[in-house]
Image (cartoon, rainbow, N blue to C red; front, side, top):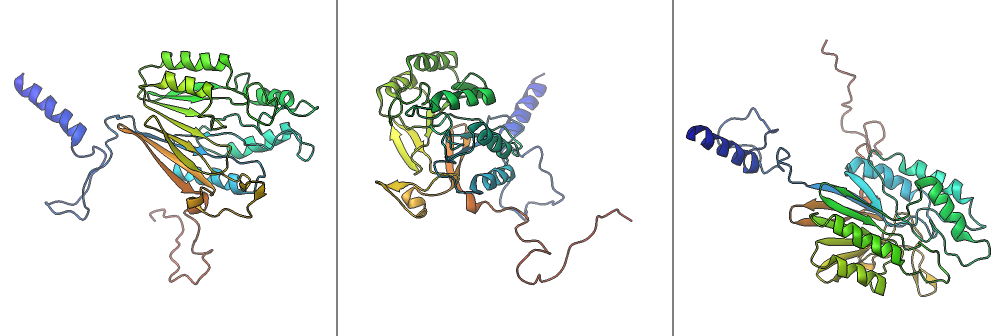
Length: 325
């Protein structure tokens, strides 16, 4: 019995810290033509997973960027995709009907092989500052597409995702309205319900970090592991509040940002926070690792083939299907 118990311990230890069970080779001997075998051990579920976060698409959308990003995200294979809102231009006499805008947008996200989670932005549900009641019109179309809930939560592999609506009541002015008391209560109840999760992620369109309403949410988050993502500014900036990371994302085809009242002609680069990108998040046992990937930096595997490469191929090596005959 002692031998069986010892064997069990050794097998368990090997599974946790030893060779990867799905790696095998025909190379024998002590010397190997590789550096190490420190593979992530998927036989022991440590809960690692990845997701992408997509920044603003609209506010002066530039054609083709967002759709290209959807194709490129497919090649990266995250578990799912989040966003920070502003995916359609909204109700405006210069734009197509908003229901047609959502139909076009949903066709773009439908190409993804993994889930895409929507967040309300001020173009998705519009400010209520004009006589034609853009807020009611755009909210009704949102609900036709996605149901009555405009803020929601979900858990995935013991992580909590809270998606806020910073346009819940529509704007009575050009400033975003505060998060409502009802939504604040819902956040509080959601956090209590999922008190034992290993990490909490908050998604919101407007970076309302310094408002009294969001400070109330921060009080409810005190002592928890959490990360916050927002958009709206079209300029990437990382903040640190109470020892936690807060990110305002740039664009994924959205309008080039302004400096004061003047719109700059083009993105000046990441050091200005100006770029078309996706944010890549890997949740590890010690917390999330966040990186930004330029949309132009994601290149498909068929960017240059034997028949499409722009220079003479050194040798033509394509071959027909191997039937074994």
